[in-house]
Structures are given as structure tokens and as C-alpha cells.
Length: 585
Ligand code: ADP
Image (cartoon, rainbow, N blue to C red; front, side, top):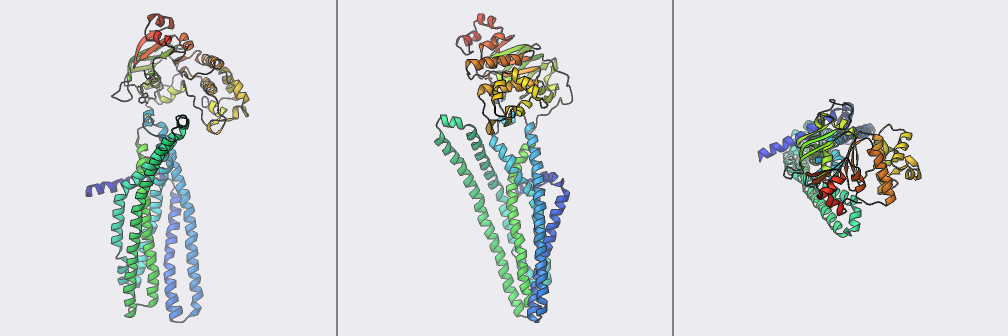
């Protein structure tokens, strides 16, 4: 058990140590916050002293002329204390927001560098929760920890020292519940971690489910599975309720329990103090002042308990944030190495690959694609067509064999350089929320309007873009105009044309569009493939017919290769696919 506790404490420290570098960047804000907090705390000594003087001097010795100055002094002290508090809150907010911004920005940068297989195994909602909510919790550990913790401890020290000057015996009575309070805090802390972890996890699950169901709302509606999904949602939401209640239940016993111990201390002071005054060993003014002081003693103790709660939730959030930070990014080992212009002679040599070591996906793949030629990949779904092209853009790394472009091994090129030279046009053309121009400029950030129109013309997209209310500057996507599948596809072809890379990967859409749209898209694609090395995951006869070579894939192996007529006469799977219209006429 003690070993476990030691580990827990080390873990606590780790969150501190890891957040500290972010906090250290703002020494001025940190100093200002702390300074205001300390000065504000010092003001607590004034009111008890004023009270004592009022009781002993103004009332006891009947000196009414002192009343106004004493009240004035108390007024000034309270004013200064709260003014300092205002400043402290302002500084603290700025400090916090800076640190949250930095932490979030670094986390985001890190996430973008993580390899695709990392995303394969994670729910979007979970990543979002970590980035948006957990980051805030983590930062509070350090900033609130330092600020409130230091102030509370300082106040306890100042007030205890002041109490000693009034009466050491009463001070001991007032301090007597402190060891019990500390023990209570310890017990709470040691058990809190798992409660908070479970709660954070439940919140994350809820976000993930919500994200999924909103993205899949069309499926839910068409399968009329609203009720089932609602039940699933409620089940997850119920988990959040339960776990939150568990956290709160512990707090419900802990906080009042601690409050009770503090009150017991107050009663001890009342008992001992009164007998001291009755025995003539203490002035009544000193006792009244002492009562005021005791409040100032227990109040920061209460704040330390609150802090403990912030800590525990921050620690759980910290684990989740730093788990991402510790995930290994795609190292750009070739960065700064070869950035020669690429022409596009692609060779796969005995390439094998598996996403999961137990399930081989590609086996001994041999492909040679001369510069500017087109290869069509055909075969049943799941055969490994997409996987072959995924390896070329290094979304995943092949397990054995080798891939070269213009004779240069893929792995000795930087990923940036490589991806800069390849355009990928997928079945589901993804457009970002933004204007047409913004979506096009992803292909070429400095593209002029003329260049954009030229690309749109080649992609047969001029007509519908002209019809948009603000042309190139019309917002698209969730917050703007919705385009049809065919239109989106032509727009993404225009985007690839603007990028103008030597290598093209094209995943031909299987969704049927009407014949005239089909023709427009086909023309656009012909423009796009012109003079480029193209890998096409093909579903249409019109495409495969033109291919310089067709590769037929079955369960991760290339089983047939050649041109259309050769393969037809060969009478294998390809001929079968054509006959059964799996390749559309
Ligand atoms: P195709 O493009 O020919 O339909 P894929 O290359 O997409 O086939 O898939 C080949 C195999 O790899 C399938 O069995 C599929 O389930 C598996 N697979 C594809 N993507 C992933 C992934 N990200 N993680 C794990 N397995 C995957």
C-alpha cells in the first residue's frame, strides 16, 4: 500500500513538472498574481486588531474619539484587500488563458503529426474532449495550485503566529483539529484519482457517441434507429451521471466532515477562552479578536480542500492530455534530405504490409509505373487497393520490401516533400467549411483568381461555381452552400489541378451520377491525369480501357496484370468482373 502511495505522489508531481514549463513562460503575470494575492492576505491582520481596540479601548476605557479612526482603518484595509483581489483575478485570468492557449496549441500541433494508425484507434469525440476540456483542467492544477495554495498556507502561518501573541494556549486549542483535517484530506486525495478518471472517461465516451451519431444522422434516420440510438445515448449519459454523482458523494461527506472538525476547534476556543477571561488571565477584547482570527484560520483550510478537488480532477485530465503528448509522432527522418524535383517513376518491390501484425493485407507486391503512365487497380473490396496507395503517400509504412520514386527510396524522402508531389482525389470529396476559393487554395495557397478559374474550367466546374451567389467567395460546407456529389468531385479535381503534382492517386467514385455529369467528371479526370503518373482505383470500364496497365488484386496479391484486351482473353478474375458488371460499362 505504501508503495502505491509513493507512486501516486510521484504521479501527482509529474503533472506539476509537465505543466511547469508552460507556466514559466509568463514570469511577469505569475509574479503580479502572486504579489496581489500575498498583499491581499496580509490585510487580514487589520480587522482583528481593530476589533480588539474597539472592545478594549473604545468600550472598555470609554474613548469614543477612537471609534471613527478605527472604523476608518478597517474600511481602508477591506477596500485595499478587495481591490488587490480584483487585480489578482484579472492577472490570474490572463495568466490562465495564455497557458491554456499554449498547451492547446502544442497539443494540436502534436496531434497533426501523429500517424494515421493512431487516429484509426481513437474516437474523434474523445480527442476533442481532451483538447477542449481536459487542457483547461490541467492548467488549473498549477496556476490555482500555486496561487491559492501559497496564499492559503501563508494565511494559516500569519494567522497562527498572530494568535500566538494573544494566547499560546488558545492557539493550541484552535490548531488541534488540524492533524485530523490533514488526515481527512489525505484520505480523500488517495481515493479520488480513480473516481475522477472514471468520470473523465465517461464524459469522453458521451462526446464520442454524440460526435458519431451527429455525423451519422442520415443513417440513423434511414434505418429508423432513433429509438435504439436514444437508448444507447441515455446509457452513456447515465454513466456520466453515475460517475459524477460518485465524485460528488465523496465530496458531500468530505467537505462537511472537515467543516465539522473546524467548528469543533471553534468550540474549544470558546470553552478555553471563556475560562481564561473568567480567571482574569485574558482581556475580553483579546478573546473577541481571537474569535475573528479563528475564522481567518479555518477559511484557508477550507480553500485547501477545494484545491484538493481541483487537483484530483486536474491530475486525471493531465494523464489524458500527456498521453497524447507522449504518443510517438511521424518522424520526418528524411527532412532536409532529398528535395530533388520528382518526375514520377514509381516502383514497388516485394512490398508486404499489415495494419495488424496478425492479419497480412498486402503480400509481395511488385509494380512498376513509368513516368506519366497510368495504372488501374481493380479487384473486390477489401483486396488491398487503397492500402497500396496509402503506402505511397506514407499514411502507413510498409513492413518489408521497398518503394522507390525515380530510384530514390521512399523512406529517404521527407514526408512533406513526398506529399507535396502527390495529389489524392478520393471518392468522398472532402470540403472544409470555408469558401470555394479557400478550398481551392489548399491545393496552391498563393493561387490567383485567374489560376483558380483556369483549374475550374479544366475540371468542368465553371458553370456551377458561377451560379453560386458570391462565386468563388461563397461559403461551402456545413455553414454554407451544399454541393452535389458530382459538383464536389469536380471541385476536388480542380484543387488537385492547382496543386499540379507529378503523381496522382485517384479513387474513382462508385456512386452513380447521371450520364451527363459522368461525362463532365470523366473529362475533368482526363485533364487531371494528363502527363502524370496516375494510380487509379478503378470501377469503370471507360477508365480501365485507357490504363497502361491493369493490376487485379485478390486478397492482397496481384493475380493478373496487363492491358484490357489481354486480360479479357485470359479469362480470369478480370474477365469475370467485367462480365458481372462489377466494373461498370
Ligand atoms: P480495397 O481498397 O481493395 O477495398 P483496402 O485496402 O481498403 O481494400 O483494405 C484491405 C484490407 O485491410 C481489408 O481487409 C480492410 O479491412 C483492412 N484495412 C483497411 N484499412 C485499415 C485500417 N486503417 N486498419 C486496419 N485494417 C484496415
